Image (cartoon, rainbow, N blue to C red):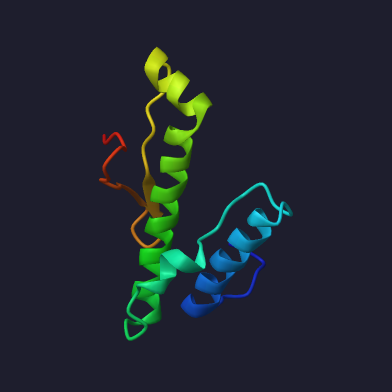
Length: 106
């Protein structure tokens, strides 16, 4: 149960974009989704489909940034960590591992 009101998929997508812009200005330590990442997305898709795509894109982007960072590269080389992108599906309670180049799976 949560205290926040439900928001639409379009509002959630805009919050991801706004979060990225705050991150780029140095106002947040957590990046969101860039406008460039959303630019090629078909605006005719239903908002829930666009939001799902945005969330997956955000997870992949974050995992890639971790893997590309000096710290991430060092930990992977040492065998201390494996970077996996995943999305928790609220409706089913399952965690879905995302397949992507450069990301470990499983």
